[in-house]
Length: 69
Image (cartoon, rainbow, N blue to C red):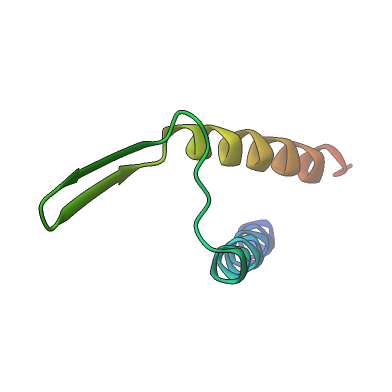
């Protein structure tokens, strides 16, 4: 059960770091992100950003789990 707690702690720290970076550097748009504006409504679908974050998290988590005996 301590593994679950450690995993939640790492995930929480990652969220804080990513959130802090977004607040400091503003929202970034990659080619492949969709923005649709109509009147007062703006729809932002971060497809490319989600793929990049998914790859980064996959690599980080793989490295964390690979180091276990």
